[in-house]
Structures are given as structure tokens and as C-alpha cells.
Image 1 (cartoon, rainbow, N blue to C red):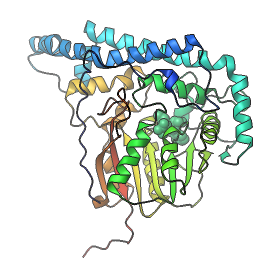
Image 2: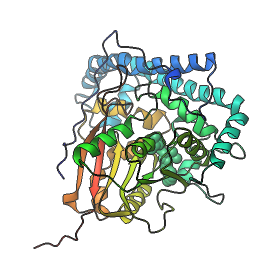
Image 3: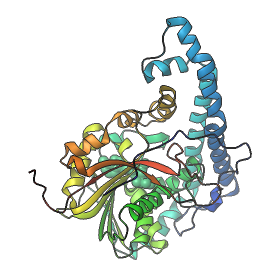
Image 4: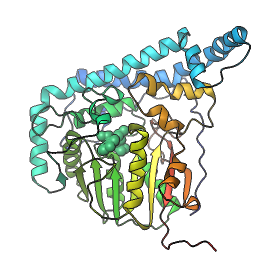
Length: 412
Ligand SMILES: C[S@@+](CC[C@H](N)C(=O)[O-])C[C@H]1O[C@@H](n2cnc3c(N)ncnc32)[C@H](O)[C@@H]1O
């Protein structure tokens, strides 16, 4: 397969009169969606706009301060530039502009996560009942009451989500899923569209471009979250059978209710560890992770890749969408991108960005000539959505792909 080569440019600052982010009231409506009171909406919209302001308007000031103050100060002090991003960051952390940007970013993230819980908790009993009723009407949700999530998910409140991905507040809880829906929209600055699903749209666009006419019959989505992106593929391939796996029961209950209320009936949501997905010896034409690899440890990632190979049908492909690796980025940009790894409770963020994902796929047995890095671009979607790579919020993503050849290849 020929594919567009991987190419991700540094996001540019927005013009001064850039439109405000898509408001939280624009979120795709469905029966399980929390009602957002006036003040909930105001908090989310301010958080989304502030998030956009920090990324688009204040980041250039951090960059200017780094060039005009941080780099010359180091040169004057030591007579040489920073050798790596760790040295560069230690200098940056002394700079007032960086410190202000970093502190505001952290506070905004905390505010948004708290705002999500503030919105969801008062209506939790009603939301639980709604999801219970919807999910009682179908058999596409499979939870395992004996399931123990991996420690890196249960111990960590990933990107400051209270309780993390696997929090359970009571019987049939859906709080983590409901909060994820509204908070993700704001954290992405509304730039991922009404359903926060532009990673799924980018995946679909990539498949349409690089495998024209291909209709996968079976798809395995590992680490599906609340299934927003899974639903894009489910709608595009209505005859495909899709299995979506995640560790979080509260995410999956919400995902199943959300999909059902949107009329999506070809996804089975199954609770399990994606390192060893609970799918027996089933095979799939497409096995994918979307924005998942940065949540897993290095050994965990290797087991996930091994499972992808094991569960991939011949002729199928495994597709992994993420943010771009650091390797070809200037040190300052590495530091800016690495903020999440140091201040946003993303424990494996830095390691993942330093990992050669293509080499990891080859290491689990994908033939070298069938592994490649590429870029997935989301089609434009309204004036406020990103059209280029934007720190994971929309537009374009780094992708690594592995194909399982139809025939066993012999060397001659
Ligand atoms: C950033 S979210 C991405 C969700 C989804 N793919 C999307 O595109 O919206 C990462 C998801 O991976 C899941 N995850 C990470 N490691 C996992 C593991 N070992 N087993 C099951 N789920 C896992 C988390 O629970 C979380 O829902």
C-alpha cells in the first residue's frame, strides 16, 4: 500500500480575530447526555475559550520568551545550548512567561475537570436510570464484575480526571463517561466538532484514501473510551461487526447507551484489558487504537501490539493514531508538547513520544515492509474546527500502521 508520508508541522497561532470555540451547547445530542445548566455551560465555554487562548495566543509569547530570554541566558551562563529537552525545560521553568502559561493551563484543566463533575453529580441518579433503561433494551454491553483494571489505570487520575478512567461511584455508574463527554469537548476547545470525533473522521478519511473501496467486515477498537470515534466507523461501515474494548465500566455503560440512542447498533462494548483483549481467538480486518498508546506503559504497549498482530486477519491492518513523536522536533517544541507528561498526570506521555512505534510493531512480528508512519487528516468541519495538527485537538494526527500480508512472504 502506498501512503502519504508522515508529516506534522508545528501548529500556527490563530489570527487575532479567530472565531470562538464551538460552544458546549453544540455537543451532539443523545438520550444519555447530561443536561447542562446555564452555569455549567458558562464554565465549560470559558474553559474551552481559555484553553484556546493559552494554546493559540499565549504560546507564541512563551516561544518569544524562550528565544529572547531563556536561550541567551543559558548561552551567557554556560557558553552552549541545552543538549536535550530536559536541560531546556529546567531553564524554561525559571522563566516567568513559561511559569504563568503553565500555571494557567494546569488551573484551567483542574477547573474543567471539576466543572464536569459539578455538572454530572447532581443528576447522576437520573442519568444512571436513563442508561440502565437504554442498555436493558439491547445486548451490546458486556461487563465483567471480576475484572481488575491494570494498576496504571486504577492508581492514576489520568489528565486530572477525578478517579481516573476506571472510577466507579456506585451500581451501574456512568459518571466518568458522562463527564468525559462534556469535558473532552471543552478540553479540545470544541475544535474536534460536536461529537469530539475528528480522530475517528481522520481515521475514516485515511482508510478511504489509502484503501479505496475497502469495507472491513470486523473491526476491533482497543481503548474505545465512550466510543465517540468508534461510532464514526460504525456509521461508515454499517454492515461491519465492531468490538470496542475498554477497562472502564462507567465509560462503557455510557458508551453503549450513547451509541444506542444515536441509532448505532453494530458495536459491542466489552470490558477488558486491551493488553489481552477478551475476544478469544477472533480475527479482525482492522485493529486500532485512537489516542490510547500514551496511556499505557512500555511493556503494556508491547503486549497491545502483540495482541493486535494476534487478532488481525490476513490482509488486515492495525492502525494507531497518536500525537507526533518528538524525534524530529526542536527542543522548545518538545518541551511544549511534553507539558502534559509533567503537569497533566499523563504518566507515559513522555516515554511514548520518545518511542519508535514503528520499531515496536516490527518487534512483535509485522514485516518491516508492511510497517509505515503516515498522517491522518480530518476533513474540514465548520469554521471553528482545526484543519491542521493542533496538539491532539483536531485536524491531523500521526499514525503508525502495520499490515498483515495475505500470503506468507518467502525471501528468495
Ligand atoms: C484517551 S482515551 C481514548 C479513548 C478513545 N479511543 C477515543 O478516541 O476517544 C484512552 C482510553 O484507553 C483506555 N485504556 C488505556 N489502557 C487500557 C488497558 N490496558 N485496558 C483497557 N483500556 C485501556 C482508557 O480507559 C481510556 O478510555
